[in-house]
Every structure is written in C-alpha cells, then in structure tokens.
Image 1 (cartoon, rainbow, N blue to C red):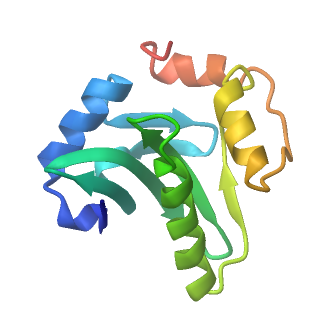
Image 2 (spheres, rainbow, N blue to C red):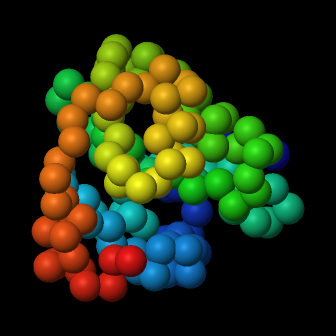
Length: 138
C-alpha cells in the first residue's frame, strides 16, 4: 500500500469518491463548509483503488481533520493515515490537531480516544444547524 497526497489524485476521482460515500463533495461542520476534494489530504492507495482518505485544513496554530474514511475496516488504514498526518504536523511544528464528530458516532469517538485524542467541547444542536444549510445530512 502506498500513501499519496490528494494533490496527486485527479480531482474528479476524489469528487466521485466523496459523492459515493458522503452523498456530496461538500462537508458542513460547526467550523464551516468545506469542499472535500479541494482540501489537502492523504490517501491510502493500492491496486488503483483508494482504500482510505483523510482531509484536513491547516490554520496558523493547528490542523483540523475534516474527514477520515477507511473503506476496509480494522486493517489499520485509518490509524496509519492519522499517524502520517500527525508526523506531517510535527515536522511543521504544529502541536494541536482537532476533529469534530457527532456524539452518536461511537466508532469515531472510540477510534480517536484510543489514539490519545480527548473530548474538549460538546456543541448542542450542531447537526441541526448544519442541516439548515444542507438538508441531506442524515
């Protein structure tokens, strides 16, 4: 398996991937609206297929994970993508990575907490607010 920057993947491939898996190339979270295919990211790539993908936004003092997908569960793909992002941040002397998920996404909460991430804030009704902008959010 190789790990590629999303800059090295054709944008339409990324758009199709996000449309298939998220219903849209657009992600709305409490920090903003993002076009996933235009964000920097890292893809796990094997035999012509994307097996996992992490996208993020870099700010002055931290990096925010916008999406993390592993299309083969329990193979270490998500963990490896997160580790590569952490190493990239370390090289740039960025010491804080944030991520937002919903409180019902138990798998994501366990995944991040197992890797040392901690819940810092709960935003009541955040999904309902996002649905006002994007009604297709499940």
